[in-house]
Length: 558
Picture 1 (cartoon, one colour):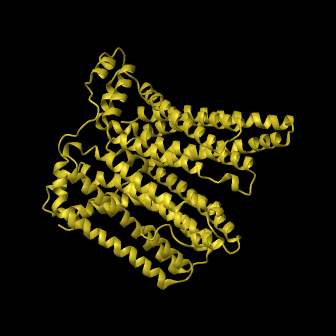
Picture 2: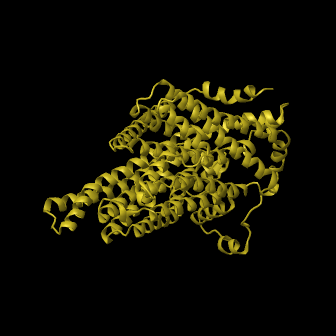
Picture 3: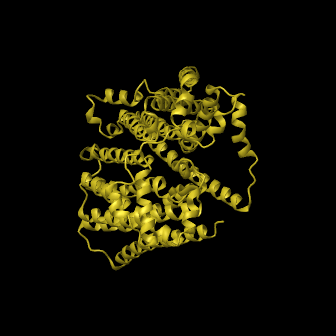
């Protein structure tokens, strides 16, 4: 049995799927939303690169440095995504028992599952990267060779990231005790964080706005000209794309060949390791998992031994399931680590050396930070709150047959997730504003705005997760790639954008009036009050409509 035969069921599931009217509408809406995102990303990239072109002598250098940072970030995200997907595909999928019972060699089965995990984990990252790379091709008037080479480079980068992740997973499964397979998420989570942190900090983007850190102008320009690190696979891809944009096809093909040779080398190493070790690692993973928290500890017995109401029973179930699911802890560690990086990057910004007045720049960054914090909150909600209903799995019938209503069930999930997300968003806003030394009124505005955005984003995650559940999901992280997950992220970005746009004008007028020591006119006061009322109304409607939509769709589900 060859690899193509093992991949046929996945291919048939895609090509022979019959779409009803509802699924067709979902595909049209998702395609339209994706196309809109592409257009916006492409337009923004064109504008940024065109602005760089206006800078004499260093415009191209800045554009290429940005390209290097983009590729480092893409490679880091691929490493993180493929670690989670490969572990599920190679060791935790439900159909692996059937696959391993077939007369097929372990390395062939490993290769087929690895190809699936590579495609599943890389397609979204590639989809979001293509508009930026296409913008580079237009700005630099690249020929057909650049676009062909771009596809080859991205494919090589995906294969390298996935192969590295597969090697890490095979080694971790073989070395760790079999009873602690689920605990590997913690180990792999820390590993992914270390890779992401090192890759990002190697680029040191804050130095681009602080030329005084270099001993001379020539050294500064040389820093812009060189990639982040010559040993990173993303550096080879950067060199290839840069040479393609500069019409150097021979040099570009050399670096593309280096990337592909390393990718093929990693595939061969994976197959050599998978032959003797993959099936043994899978066999070790079939034993009972180790748990950090015992459900029958004295503390839990004292707190949850008696359930006097369905409400208390649901609350108890949510809390205990969270502590029993060890895969959540690695995600918490990763999120905490990324937040530390997020805050640290604000601390290294050389605001005092900027040509723009510090007070303007501080408050501008603080205002934009509200949108960034909203996107961070969206990512956390997508990982934890959105798959909260889907994670019930085949046991959801117990919820339907319980005396508690689905309305109470969803609102319990909402209130359980609200407190930690609220604390997370407020700590993020306050910490970054303290580093920026913003004015007191900007601090108050940021705190209040994120306080209204948090329940709105959470309600959209809970509501859309209930409206489009997948009770057969194997990994909660996969729920985000579904139609409901994509719609949640799009609607969340829309709400965040609407709030920022509504507040931008009044905040600017209020800020300038304070700088110039002028009083606001009655029209400006009315505009200010009306904008903030609309912001509150949007957030309140997002909570009410999202929860009602989720409850209605879940009640009408067969």
